[in-house]
Structures are given as structure tokens and as C-alpha cells.
Image 1 (tube, rainbow, N blue to C red):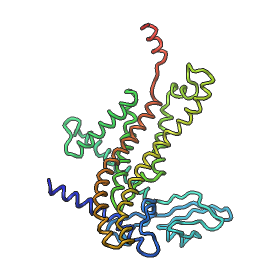
Image 2: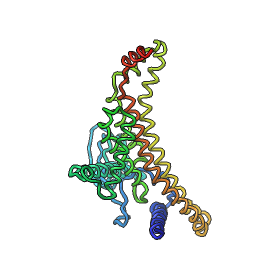
Image 3: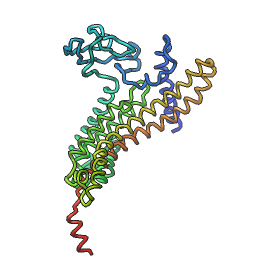
Image 4: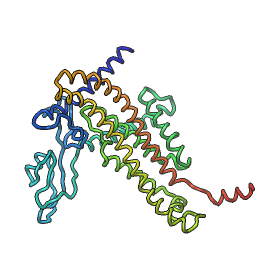
Length: 354
């Protein structure tokens, strides 16, 4: 047991120390800053693979629909940013493509690092779910008990999402049809969050585009699930004076859009801040070494590495917690919209009880 814990601790320290080494090596050549925090967490046109050629970077395709100074629409594709600039009038400025004078980018379809890890998270979630589903169809876990730790963990998570998230917040006769969405979102976000703990990987959920996309999906499901009673309480408010409706209706309409906004911002801010915190704490090693010399850098490293190990353990918990919170709030919003209020029946029962 002690040997296993020691190996885990050494692995975490190795991963922690390797994180600043990656971006510090890039910053060391030229007049680049010692610590480029935002440049590290930003979306990139490449993914990093440890031990791979070309500095561990695999450049991603660029696909851009753009218009030139004459208003002509063009679509160009290339295997990397550099090759795209060579075959088009675009220029590379601070590692980004800039449209020629008088031209503009209409839609950028380029594949980025955050998009890659978004795909990986969702594909892994779907693949695991389909694999487990095939095992259940064969009777493993249905006719006999689940076999192996992997299937047992999967069943615990699935039952938790079904019973404690979906059925606890949505009417019983409607809850089960939303379970596939909730479980996919939970697993996908959890994988994306955990991928961000790898020093060479990107945190897809630290991108507002990713979290906003997930929130918009929840938004549309919520609105399409809305009952007549749900819309009535937004636009009519039965039993409320007319002058009060004039105040409440705009507030309720605004609330329709603030809910998905809060979903997107909460997940994005939590994951981005965690990534920045780890990079900043480890970056203290290079900042102190640059200002006060190597001895100061080694001295600060004792504090930075230990604190980073603690933060990594905390981030594992936060990664799962944020996936749960996003899924739970989605269930709450959808449940509020899909809930059936039997006003006439309640009024009838109340009269007879009186």
C-alpha cells in the first residue's frame, strides 16, 4: 500500500513539474515572457503529444471561409497555419492568421486543441456507454451481477444519474427519456475536465465556446419540454393582477436566458481558474529563478510542487463536482419546464377537504 502511494505521489510530482517545462522552454528563446499564463490556457492550432517529433506538436488543419477586398467569397483549407498562410494572402501574426487588407474571415471551421479534446471526451463517453449497453444486452449485469470493477463503477454512476438527478427533479413518467442526455453530458464533461489535468493536454471546458454549446443544448431541450402551464407562468401568471404581470413577464423572459448563461459561465470559470492557478503556482519557480537566481528557484519549488500536488487532488474532485453540478442544474431547469401542475384537480380536492 505504501509503495503504491509513493508511486502515485511521484507520478503527480513528475506531471506537475513537467507542466511549466513545456511552456518555459518555448518562452526561453527570444524576448518572450518567463510565464505566459493566458497563452498556455488559450486554444491552439496544435495538440501536444509527449515524445512526438516537432517538439511534441501535431499541427491541426485550418479551414476558413473568407472574403477578399472585392467582396468575393473564398474557402481555403490547409494542414497547418503555416501552410495556410503560404497558399493564401493571410499573414501569421502572433501565431494567429490575419486576413488580408480589406478582407475578413466569415466562418473559421478550423480544428483546434479544445475541439479535439471536446471530441475525445464525448466520443469516450458514448463509446463506454455503448460498450456497457452491449454487455447488458448479453445479460451481464441484468441476468447476472455486473462483472469487473469497470462495469460496477459504470452502473453506480448510471444509477446515480438516473435516480438522484433525473428522477429526483423530473416527473417520474417523463424522467427516464432525459437520462441518456444527462448521462452523456455528465460523462463527457467529466472526461474533458480530467483531460485538463494532463500537462500536455488542453481543458476543453475552460473554453467558453464549449460550455456555451452545452448550455445552449440544455436551453433548447428545456424550452421544447415546456408544458402549457410552464409557458402560462411566463406570459400570463394566472390569478395575478394585470399590472403585476407587466412587471413579472419581462423578468421571467429574462430568466429563460440567464439560466443557460449561468450554466456556461459557472463551468467555464471554475475550470479556467483552476488551470490558471496551477500554472501560476508552478510558474513561481521560473519567476524566482529569473529574478533571484537558481537557488531561489529551487527553494520556491519545494513550496510550489507540494502545493500543486494538493491542488491536483482537489482538481480531480472539482472536475467531477462541476460535471455533476452542470448535469444537476440541467435536470432542475428541464424539470421545472416539464412539470405538470394540475390546478383544477388541486382546487377540487381543496374544496372537498374544506
